[in-house]
Amino acid sequence: CAFIYGRDGHLEKFTREMQDRLVKNVIEPMACDGLRTISIAYRDFVPGKAEINQVHCEGEPNWEDEENIVANLTCLAIVGIEDPVRPEVPDAIRKCQKAGITVRMVTGDNINTARSIAFKCGIIKPSDDFLILEGKEFNRRIRDAQGEVQQHLLDKVWPKLRVLARSSPTDKYTLVKGMIDSKATVSREVVAVTGDGTNDGPALKKADVGFAMGIAGTDVAKEASDIILTDDNFSSIVKAVMWGRNVYDSIAKFLQFQLTVNVVAVIVAFIGACAVQDSPLKAVQMLWVNLIMDTLASLALATELPTPDLLLRKPYGRTKPLISRTMMKNILGQAVYQLTVIFMLLFV
Image (cartoon, rainbow, N blue to C red; front, side, top):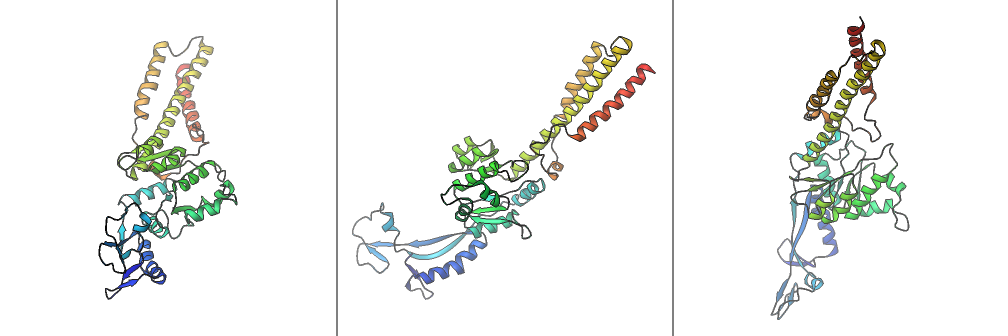
């Protein structure tokens, strides 16, 4: 903009000093409150005598000449638009944090706007040790003199990074790839990414789990993702985590039950055959054992619904064995107890 209306309503030159003052006193405070600022400006094309802020034009202006069209505009106002945080998002992020999930925000918004939204959502807290960067600074920190991304430099940034503002889709992909390839932690990070635009496709595809928006998402984003959120709601991700942990726990419970029954059945059949020259368990009895062990156990253990308590613990590590030490103790304890009772009935 080259012109602006002053306090008295008269047209004035919009000097650099006035622009800087407007940014400092109006735009930055709006951004810190989480508002996206838009300037409203105009330019008149008149056929007759033109004023200082007008353009003389006998015919139709050349609308294709964008550079000339938007030059020397007259600023009318600065408008702040708020994109309010959904009421359920702060609670969903709090549940993610309790479940051991770190939430990071990658956005194209101004850094002050991004910081304000992150505080409102609970992504960052004043007491936390966090890092907020713009895309330009992020690239400066992770790239060498030749412009190549260096993993050891990225490993110094991403653990504390919570908000990446003024970023491009390439920055998002670089962050996702760097976290997956990182050796900074004992076990590799499991990275989930949300996105709705065509440019989010590479990051969604690279992530371990890609969440695409079902309503606002493009076809490219949906095809690149693993899960589509039909309601475009962040809280649905929490439900997905809860169901995923429930499936894992149900498999572990079913496996523990199966191994306990199998260990007892095999030992009873073997020792019984060696001691009395005949298996204590007949064929029909083994069929009944399998009927209970397979059918009823699967119905009881594999159909259990998830509970919110699943989100109160940290996630299992990628290298954690399916049969944990606690499960092994339970299997051996139950097997010893059942074998003791069965052998007492057989030999006492």
